[in-house]
Amino acid sequence: MAVKLDVRKAYDRVEWAFLKEVMLRMGFAEEWVALVMRCISTISYAVNINGSRGNVFKPTRGLRQGDSLSPFLFLICSEGLSSLIRRGLAISHLLFADDCILFGVAQNRGAMILKDILKEYE
Image 1 (cartoon, rainbow, N blue to C red):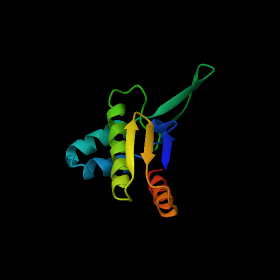
Image 2: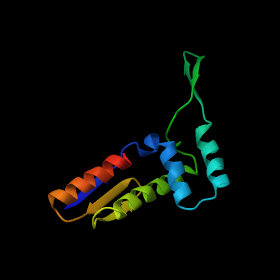
Image 3: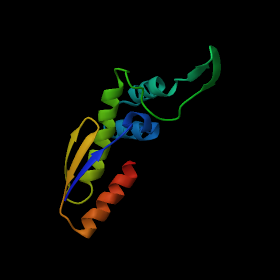
Image 4: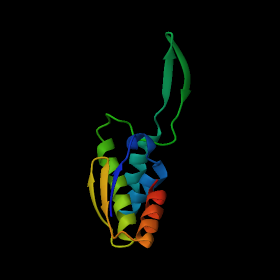
């Protein structure tokens, strides 16, 4: 089987806890991980409506597009997907930006494992 994943709005959906866990498991120093997490989690937004500033709100997930660090952090998240795939059945994969192609044996068991992997990554 071949499965093509196109992760739409992937940057907006990155769970900060997942990113933190992947960085720690990859062996990044705790101090570095804490610094990165402060960089991505201390942002706040306000919307201007008719020239007046609205309420300030803070996101609880996501990476900022246009931030020079975000593409590298997204690659780290992709490594998290790769590690989930490696612990499943013999599924091969190719990653490119926010696209992913998965290859495996077309059997019910393999499809169920792949579904479970994708659900966990989601």
